[in-house]
Picture 1 (cartoon, rainbow, N blue to C red):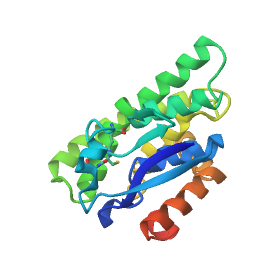
Picture 2: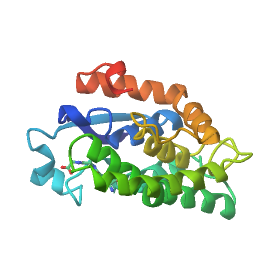
Picture 3: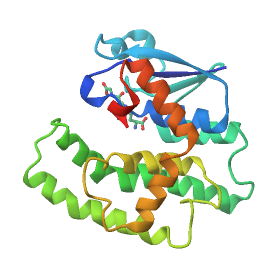
Length: 216
Ligand SMILES: N[C@@H](CCC(=O)N[C@@H](CS)C(=O)NCC(=O)O)C(=O)O
């Protein structure tokens, strides 16, 4: 049985934003049995020696699959997809999934995550935020081009790369950054109306003592 180490208590401001959602969505989507081990971040549980032993940076998420411990969201999602037989059979198809996982996390996410952090008050915004906006548009325009004639980002079928990209894009949901990108907007809606994401939101909200409306 897979154990997902996720948040059980975390600062109010980041409920609904955390990366354990990405792993839980993958588990729900792939139909793998799992349990969640809820950690109390506000109570310092991520800094405990027991958690440090499995999480190199004292962060969430981590999974433990009967002794196989994996940290880092992208690595976890690729591990789970491989375990579930949900990666393309051919090398080119697998490489495309890996490429788009990395693209989501290392090319698309940096400007978008920084803007979110500023909007949540975790970093000063102002001119710093203004400088990030053109960078965000550059990566969003690249995704818009990639989605020409495509339903999903890496393959004909939905893959874990879509989980990463859609959850990265979700960080823009309280901004107007996606306006002007019709393919991207439709892609985003297509991904986030999937039943597995809806189940993930419900379970996450329940665990964190919030409502789906609070975190959607
Ligand atoms: N590169 C890591 C980043 C993990 C990460 O930033 N986790 C955040 C939650 S989304 C965390 O645990 N924050 C609490 C802390 O750093 O104290 C991944 O993709 O898994």
